[in-house]
Length: 141
Image 1 (cartoon, helix red, strand yellow):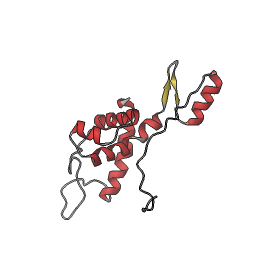
Image 2 (spheres, rainbow, N blue to C red):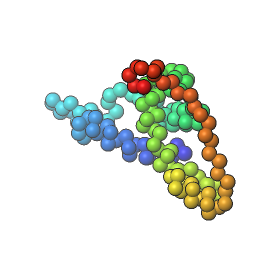
Image 3 (cartoon, rainbow, N blue to C red):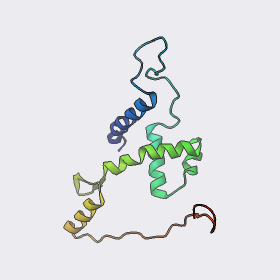
Image 4 (cartoon, rainbow, N blue to C red):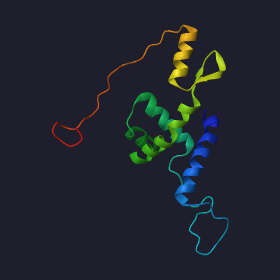
């Protein structure tokens, strides 16, 4: 999965870095040039493998961002940003159908069409998840 998502992640990451830099990378030493050369700047605290694992653990187990942050020894905001960057990738990648190696379900419409065509019984988990809400009479309620 990592090998298939890595090119998509790089393709999505470069335009964001380009916008944040305000232009192309610097080609060489130039007086007054504020753009960074390749490899300059802060190093990422979590590599793509760690970002993908943190995202999958968060999505699968429903853990807060604090749990992967503690595991990797980084701040919760780092994990929050990493999950925000990586989360769209598995969704666009889709879910594999076990008996058909080339077919993937990427949308709910794909899932429902597959269920209808194959006569599969679909069960949706409607378990209620408790969410902390502001007290009555306070802003945001």
